[in-house]
Amino acid sequence: MILPSRGVKEYDRRIAAVGNYNIDMVVGRVENLPTWGTEATVPYLQVRPAGSAGYTAIALATVGVGVTCIGNVGEDSYGVFIRDELAARGADVSGLLEADGADTGQSVVIVRRDSERAFLSYNGHLAAFDEKCLMEAETAAVGFEQTEWVLLSGYFLLPGLGYEATKRAFTRWKAMGKRVAFDPGWDTEGWPQHTVDEVTKLLQFVDLFLPNEDEARALTQGSNPCSMASTLRDAGAGIVAVKLGADGAYVFDGEERIHMPAIKTEAFDATGAGDSFNAGVLTGLTKRWTWNRTLKFANTLAGIVVSRKANRFPKLDEVYKKMKSQEE
Image (cartoon, rainbow, N blue to C red; front, side, top):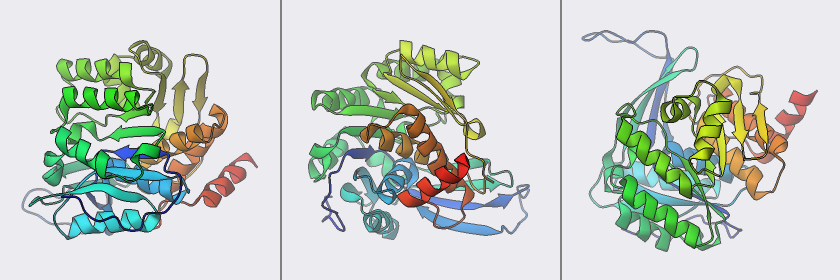
């Protein structure tokens, strides 16, 4: 179902965030899980919108970058919550369709005291996000034609797409003159060989590949960021940006190789860190920044997000202020 657009700002929408828009129920900070048949209390529980694609969209909109959301939501109060929260940030939500009769997908995110996490996910409405739904969402999104970059996130949480439909989408976007960014996320089936082969074959259509270190290692069997980035670029990706968590990020674009350390911060909850980093990199690319500035911005944005319990996504001036303080 195509819902009426709400809260759309009239600015140049330069990035489309395609993928999983769902609810995260975050509990933490947990030292030990209770055994079966027992109960434990936790210091905090938060209900947050809106999945990998949603976190990137929120981060982009909050720093003032135009973003169009492409995906679906459930036909329930959580679906309304996701759309309202994104629209309140200034994101274009005209491309978020309602999955008739479906509950909104949710992930229970268990955060350990050291900020590491484990996930239990229910796909819900995401199972209805297939090729037909994707194309309908593209048509409904008032800002899609103006986008320069299209990012697909949460690939493994979108079973209705699969390899062939994703390949057709990438091909279609490239034919429209758009640049394709891809963050596959973690394969919940443990990266069997056929999955490795499929993701690797998709890289020929990808201008910017954004795996984390574990995902890059699963795809390449490599042992260090330099070799993994080279292997992934040899497979066809234009730019490879490997997220290294507390060690920062490593980028190889075929000419420059750059390792940018993470900023110094005390991590409270790492949920959304990689998605925020993606937003930072895409911000730099749309603004034509150098890699040095782009990666400092992306790492700083992600660092602020992981350090906060509430109001996690910073505005542009907050990111700049933190960058300046790191240089002093």
